[in-house]
Image 1 (cartoon, rainbow, N blue to C red):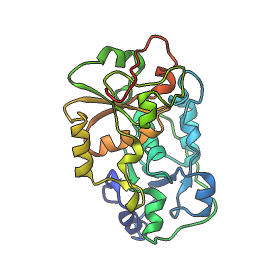
Image 2 (cartoon, one colour; image 1 turned 30 degrees about the vertical axis):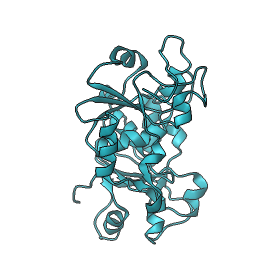
Image 3 (spheres, one colour; image 1 turned 45 degrees about the vertical axis):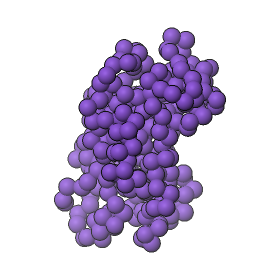
Image 4 (tube, rainbow, N blue to C red; image 1 turned 30 degrees about the horizontal axis):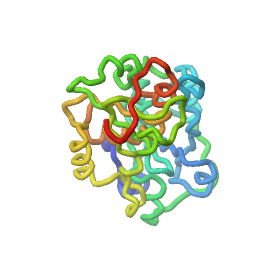
Length: 278
């Protein structure tokens, strides 16, 4: 099987699925809402509940589950070390991007994202399957955690203000400014720039990622450039799953802050700024 791109268009995936090739080492994972998955999904896709990839407890509900739990989750899906994962969802890439971040964290390097997910697939008039596709279980062992793909609050505090450091806040402008609060404190990390995750999706093209050249220009204008270490976060590292994914596609040095605002905004020792300026 040929090498598959990180960003895969629905036409490319359909060609692969109808090519007659041996696809035993391809695993398509759908992270749509269960009802949406059952109503119609990409042929052979298995379903993954997004909650299975979250720690789910304070102070970092969006943190990474323990390796033992991840091993069970991915074994139940049928993942193997040489499987190529093709990820998508029904929301434009948040959960699929989160999945790709998790794969990075456990050292699994073979994956693609279906641009626009199920919305783009259906817009293109491609065939779907209904009901549940039962995966063939495997005995997958999550590898040693790859800490270069994540940072913690202490590290961010040590880097605030550095010229080669930037923070991409993927939350809404109201959350960023501190007028909409989902923690003990509202606002943003000093120096962080705000570009809401959904602004990076093309509503006219079934939630496909914005034109990459245009997206790159937007990020450059925000100071999110290739010469910087870029940290991305939201409230629980769900919405920033999308921004992490886009950063990878654009070749940025991007890392996830899984603690996100649910941790930062509830601590007493982290600096917070309000208003619309970094």
